[in-house]
Every structure is written in structure tokens, then in C-alpha cells.
Length: 432
Ligand SMILES: CC(C)(COP(=O)(O)OP(=O)(O)OC[C@H]1O[C@@H](n2cnc3c(N)ncnc32)[C@H](O)[C@@H]1OP(=O)(O)O)[C@@H](O)C(=O)NCCC(=O)NCCS
Image 1 (cartoon, helix red, strand yellow):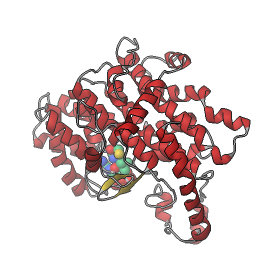
Image 2: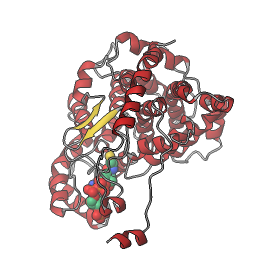
Image 3: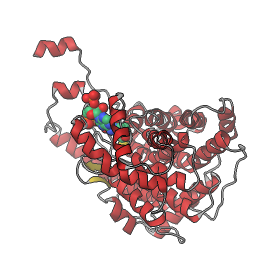
């Protein structure tokens, strides 16, 4: 058995017991009150879910199992050629709560290489779609098409004991994560290149190989994928992609159904699709202003025009965060290190100065600061990936690690079917 799975075998029973005790002895303790505004307002701030893998503080930003992004950049092992953390290491941390050794990482890399072949029928399912189908639609189809492989579904039919649910979910997760790069790479090559599959390079790590299979073989692109896949993986449990995966998984749908559903949520412009929208918006600015780097005054006018036309400024604002997203800062650091002179990066930096005061002046957005999506596109364009409709798929490959690690833990601690109570306006009126 792998080191990762045997570690889980060791820690799951203890944690399950601990959670059982808490539920039994402290089940009556109140977490929060819910207001009418919260019921109508997308449940912001309502504390009703358990997610172990990460926690989000409005001011500090994300901590993965207690570690900030700068801490992970320092503590997680990196590829021999670079300095960025290996996403395999983050996955180990999310799963176990412990920092991985080099050996732990090498094992996951190897396992994902061995499990990484996409079933033939998945290519066919994608090929049945028109070539110009949005990459996120292709991604969702490609994930759910793999449901034929579900070990959990097969074990469930055989009557597996619920205490053991997490084990086939773990196997399905490892298979799915192993194959997502091949799936995403195929979608990229089919949508924008000649559609010929680029075979995996067994000498590369998960992120590096993903870059390679999409046809990007520079060290900078590999490094970009490593940091990109690490920082986008998890953002606690309430965001739409995580919550949807958790909700669908709570019916004991297998991870193929659950992740595909979560990815459909990520495909919304207020969530993951914002990364493509940011790039589209910046290109619009450049086009309308005749190319080159616009002036601050030009940018201010463009931001006000966007707001006046009833649109959001993509890449700014957040449902929880109230400061600059540390995932934005990590990407800014990457740009400052590798591409400080890049024209689009300069525009992104100018927007960082221009947008927050305008959103503050407008007085609507609770958070005027940039989020993760404000920065990722320019890094990709600089490295030769111009097809911004594809960007959310990259986000999805990463997000899968977080939401699937959580799904394993959901089954390990026996979280039940999720079923909150909904209310009618008639009821609300009756309590006023
Ligand atoms: C992320 C987001 C959906 C959070 O939504 P939220 O929790 O409802 O945000 P707020 O409570 O601050 O929203 C209050 C108001 O400010 C507006 N607002 C928030 N962010 C805004 C932005 N970037 N540009 C313009 N208006 C914005 C909201 O649309 C809302 O307007 P309304 O009262 O007319 O409905 C929102 O900030 C947004 O749409 N951002 C742009 C899209 C984006 O970058 N998404 C990726 C998030 S990681």
C-alpha cells in the first residue's frame, strides 16, 4: 500500500472517533444565528459546513491545513530545476495535515504517472462535441464520461460497509487526478492546435508533465504550472465549486459525478470563469485604446465605463476576502521575478492602483481588492498560452485536488446527505 494510503489508514479512525465525540457531546452548541438578509443573500457568513483541508480568513487569506501560501513556498518540496512548490506536495498536505517528505511526493508523482492514461471512450465522448464547444463544457463531459470507471460505484453495488467508503473514493480520486492533465491537455490541443495527443513525459512531475502535454516545454511554463496548480487548489468549503462537489458527493454520487458538477459551478463568470473574463476585459481596454500600455487616466475611464454599463470589474471583489488575495500576490511575485517588463503585467499593476479606489468611491463592493483571477491570465499569455477561454480548465485541474481531498474526508468521517431547510417569502413575512 502507498505511504499516503497507509497514512490515511492510520489517521482516519482516530479523527473519526474525535468527530464522533464532538457530535455526540457538543451537538447542541450554537455556531451562529442566521438573518433574513443572509437567507436572501447567498448565505454569506453562515457557518454550516465542515471542511478540513483549508480555512479562509477575510484579512489574511487562505491557509492550507494551517499554512499560508508564502509558508508553503518555503516548506513544500520543489522540482530539481526550480523553486516553486510541487502540487503533489500540497495534495499530500491537504489529505493528511502533514508536510510531505521528498519520498511522499515522489510516490504520488509515480502513482499519478502510472494511473494517468485516459480511457479511449473519453476521447470519443469529447470528439462528439463541436470543436468550438467551450473548454469547460468539454472538461465537464470528459470528467463525467470517466464515471464508467468508478470503483466506488461498483463497490457500493456490491454492498461495501459504510466505514470503508473512503477507500474506493480514494482510489477513484487518485485515478481522476492522475488523468485530469491528459484530459485538459487533449481539450487544449483539440480546441486550438492540431488535436494530436502529446504523450506524457515520465521524467516529469505532475505539473511539469501537464505543461509538456499541452505543448509547453519551457522551464518557466513548468514552474508556472507548479505554482498555479498549488495556489488554486482549495479555498475552504463554501465556494461554489467546493460546495457543489461536496453537496453532490453527499448523495454518495461518486467523484466523477461530484467533480463534474463542481466544475460546472467553476464555469460561472462570478467564480472560476473570471480568469478568462479578466483577460478578455484587458484586451478590450487595449483594443479600444489603440494598443500599447494605456495611461492611468484611460484605465480609470474604462473602469468607470464598465461599472456604468452595469458590469462587474472582473478579478476584483470577493465573497469572503477583504484584502488583496494572497494568491494574487503570489502570482505578482512570479511576474516580478520572471517578466517585470511585460506590457500586460504593467497594465495589471496599473489596475491594482486604479480599481480599488474606484470601487471604494462607487461604494458597492465590500472588497475592492484583486482576487486570484486578476493575475493568472497575463502570466499565461506571457508564456505563450493566449487562448483565454481555456484558462478556467487550468483552474479546474487544480481545484480538483482540494475538493476531492475533502470528499475523501467527507466519506471518512461519515458526513451525511446535505439537506438545508429552505423558506418561502410567505414564511419570512409571517415572522416579521
Ligand atoms: C466575487 C463576487 C461574485 C463576490 O460577490 P459578493 O459577495 O456578492 O460581493 P459584494 O457583497 O461585495 O457585492 C455587493 C455589490 O457590489 C458589487 N460588486 C462586487 N464586486 C464587484 C466588482 N468587481 N465590480 C463591480 N461591482 C462589484 C456586487 O455586484 C454587488 O452589487 P449589487 O448590490 O448591485 O448586487 C463579486 O465581487 C464579483 O462579481 N467580482 C467580479 C467577478 C470575479 O472576479 N469573480 C472571481 C471571484 S474569486
